[in-house]
Image 1: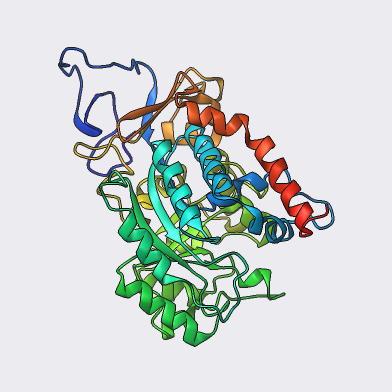
Image 2: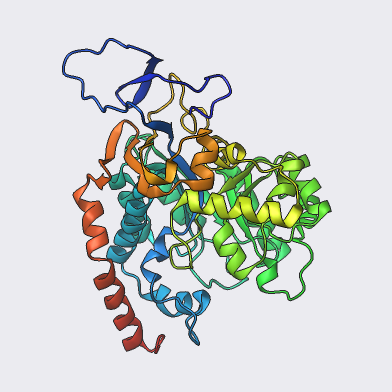
Length: 427
């Protein structure tokens, strides 16, 4: 299932050379010594593309909960100052291992707790070690003051330090800005200008609903008036986008990333149907592993599809469009749709192999409907990213991925102990 308008679905062989899909076709002649994965009877799709994921706080999973003072923001404020560079590395590495297990081959690492060059390097090195591609969006330190300008000198240093060659052509930079509802109008304009001078894509949370009871609008018309929207901007969440907000997003070519599980837990219902009907480029994201969510893309899509049908009584969101939100539309959001997001000759080889004999995919039917309505990550047999096999026969290949999983609880406990000793955490 190519999810590419120019490549029909059907039975095919896929020849990968140097990380590129070199040929598609039946009965391809293979050079001697080429590794073969027998996909007979299986389903191959593009790798999933996540467009908004806070990798740095993955080790907070299991500490965030329903008890008093254990909500996400309380835990984040208490523990965030105590992450070491080593914690940043292994937190990201843990999340990226879970990404591979769930078929995600591209991750937008949305870092809103940049504490210095060391943690930037740790995040990027973890991403490189994972074998995945993506974007690193440089943001402010967690709980930065509303009048505190983001450290753009640190961004410049990171961009100069991490050249395209060092990034293996798989990772590019963006910026995570707070916007005029978290800072002053003047500071927001200054940060937007700094980002656009550097020609880096911008992403911003739109979550006024978490601070303003009874919120009925995201206030994106204000950003439109101030020239802050555009095709270089991704807005995350926007669950209370008004009709005027949506019109402004659509007219300016601004992108939307939704995180259904975390949004329905803490904000409200994502308005995906309205975004789609307005022609807004809309994609899917995990948000954070610390919240009541995981990286199971198919479960998120299934929940989103059911909610949208119940909420709107309209079938605008179909299983195939839902899969596009997690593949080619997401790749377009990140500006890499010429590289990944669909299966076609010349693109990088980011692929998922699903075992169609898995119980969740039987009896077989329309492949898009089968995946979204019934599929689970347990059906994933192999994951290939940039031509590298990262999951084989359902098992992670990389030793560091397994190490990240095996040590996650130990590292979380050590972080909690440091925060407790410092007096910022007592739960």
